[in-house]
Length: 366
Image (cartoon, rainbow, N blue to C red; front, side, top):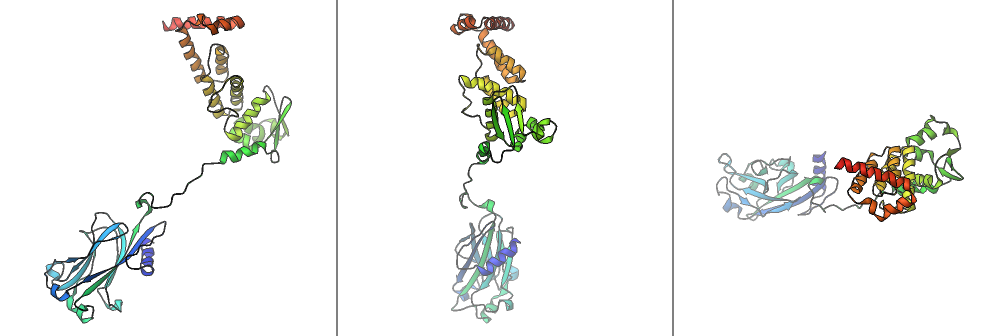
């Protein structure tokens, strides 16, 4: 297929030293004329002696035409030959034709030739079959003691050989899939299920919830749980703000109002409840995000609560963070710190249990 396209391009798109191209396969074409003066004086130079044309470039490769007035070898002495030479060392896909200026009926001239080639061969990509010089004179191709050689060449370069920047760059916009899905969070027209959490109701889409949670899938689509055909699903043991944050994550893959996983104050409590919700509905990515946030928020006041939460939700990394914090506290004078005194005054039972844990850790590390 490449050769046929090259042939078509060669026949229809030739002009003197012009280059044209199209994709996905890049074609470079040109017509080169090489005028040999003093024909009669040079025709007896001896075999293997040639006259080289100026170097020309087609398709990023450098070429020359070599004219042998007395043959390329001893066996072809007295014959004219023309060769196209690639001056570099690369392999090339190309198609070409060689002829003499002034030819009218090319079919009657055995010297006219067209060839396609892939590999170099001793630095010569293509050479003309040798013909006796007298034939050129008889056909009137030698004029004013000059012979003009015409070479039409078309070079193919696949896209991967192009230099960076030679093709226009297409700027691909960032994915907006999450933004598009997020719009359905407030689309009450297409919603097909209602959740009631305490005194608040939330509209949602079964397919969205089922895609993110195997628990929702069983509840709303697969029929394994009785809520499948219910128009309103009751959610127990969860605060409305937590369920709202859960829905927001399902539709947008983000935590509402929390950036860069930095939380303070009441947000920490929300994250704890959201961790429990994520564990309940098997939303694993949300669970991991909440666990990562809480690992950075371990302190003495929340240590026991965090340990219990980690154990309840099977969060091994959060549990490990609590252990590391306890080890650090065992190496410091914790009971003399101001925050421990505040904790002891307000929550003496918690303070005593932490103090006991610190002492046990000290025994282990000593």
